[in-house]
Length: 314
Image 1: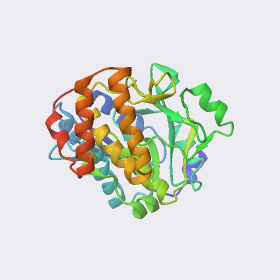
Image 2: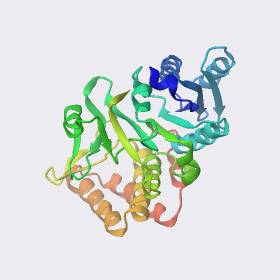
Image 3: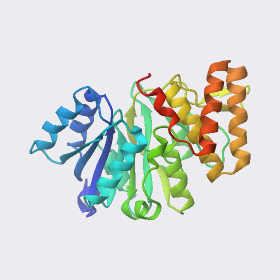
């Protein structure tokens, strides 16, 4: 615990929530027991499940760290929520912002373990494991220098005997980002809404020369999210399939833009080819393929409004 007590920097947790009051209450209760936090900023994406009313009560209480609530006028997605939350955290004097969704749950010592690397990195975070199968990663990791992704904690530990995987981070699931880096690269792209905003922020940080890492001894528990990393092309690669049309539309649009802007057209065209293959052969679905192409066309035109027609859909 001395690492936290000796760290003089002001640490503010930033939580984005939407219609998951029970999970938010669980998370806030856990965060209030974490030493070293100055405040907990909660950005509510105009929830309709009583979240706003509960936040009014939580933010008025005397418990520390204090909950600072900001309710948005409409659902702006994870991207809009983290854009606003990060802006507010810096406005309130954060030296380090600890970013997370409402459905994650950091281990009690997660922050302490991350802070053992304070000063070594600018943007670093924990592994994210399935809360029902804690030997399995929720978000597969592509290890540096390898083509394949890994799904098991045993593979992660074997690849990182010193407890750190440099150059890899899973934002925004319990990651720490320094004030200096945010001031250098700016806030999250709120127009992305969901899916790809976190990856874009990591790519932007990487482009700016940020020191990035995953600390394998620090963990966030998270519900399983489905078929991320679904094998395709006879197991030679994977595709991030989701049953949600909203998420898939945003993923198709945002991922193509990210690849074009940060990796170049060859990588962008490879993503188009993978999508065509996946929904033509691996999991044949002409309607989903049409949706993919619509999202991609919108991204190339710079139109980030098309997702709005899916709001309210599962």
